[in-house]
Image (cartoon, rainbow, N blue to C red; front, top):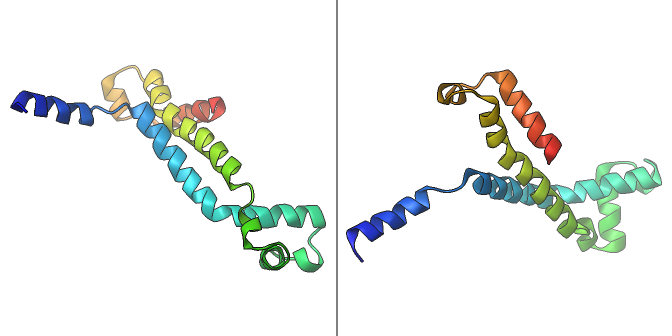
Length: 130
């Protein structure tokens, strides 16, 4: 391999699309966090359905009841669809932030030192689109 082809390969790896990187980073990060929090969401839903009395009075009682009566795997029921939703939603939010921020700024200098109001607007628009 020649020196220039090695350099081109190295440069092509450095030039990654920020939209793709943001989408993947946001998507994977939120999917991983969903994996850890879905048992609590499951307990919350059961508490809402059955009322916060008896065996579903607290989160710990609800988690224990579900585990004992239906098995531990039921705490993660629906994980696939929840992760897909989080991947698309959070990935889109994170990926859209930078292009929205850049569209609101008028110069390279302003992009480097973006005012807080424009950052909030970019986040709101990106989240609204997602």
